[in-house]
Length: 312
Image 1 (cartoon, rainbow, N blue to C red):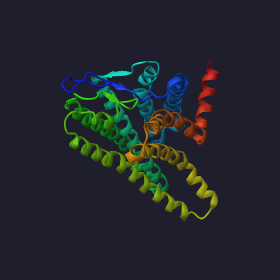
Image 2: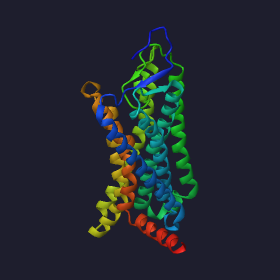
Image 3: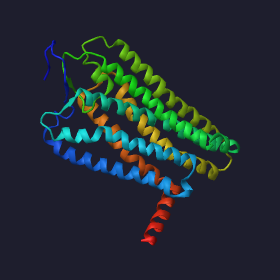
Image 4: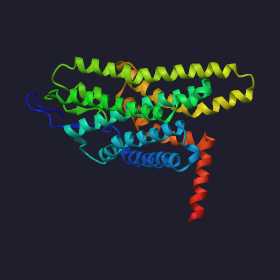
């Protein structure tokens, strides 16, 4: 479906799942189940970080906000995705598309920055333990979380305002199940050069920079681990970082493959699978990573269950 060159586009058609045919029903139920697990798992993490005093530390303060960002990030995408899976004509009005793009960028960038803050917390705890209380005081933690959301707001606002000012008079078909920056940008009737330059700048500033900070933190942590004389000490240090490192690999790995692979070697089906992975599967996995691999979280879960079960 397209529009005439002289007709202003009022809605986009999302064809992300158009090729799945009879698989759309099972895909709907599978994504719905994963979405519910994401909501429940991340809500549990938030509840535990608030309810159990043993988790009132910078690491879990960041984790609680990361779980909140995960919930909001998936909620920006999944409900409409589920609706479109049941629709024979999955359309989205321009205003809704720009709104989705704004919040998708906001919470996605906030997650990148929160992961960097969590890496810095691990660096401070392992490499500078004597200065940890000073480096990670309450004000510093609140400032890092606030800066993470601010970076997301700046990114979302920049993307949305630029795209909102572009004219759309040609095709209105997006070969995706969400309004992402580049697929929408390429439908504009005017030059998108500065939009693509801006997108590259945002990618470098708010995605690549946090990733480099994370890597720098782990290089320092690795050097500290290698300097520990006992195997038990090395295992203890590594265990405090393993959950976060796994989430970083999962988050950045899928996003890197999705956004940085050559366009010539990509197919639409591959793009959809990758997008489902980083918008649905990864947020679902994170609570399991932090609960199953973290003794403090599992201990807090047992204490909270015991407390409330006994009270009832």
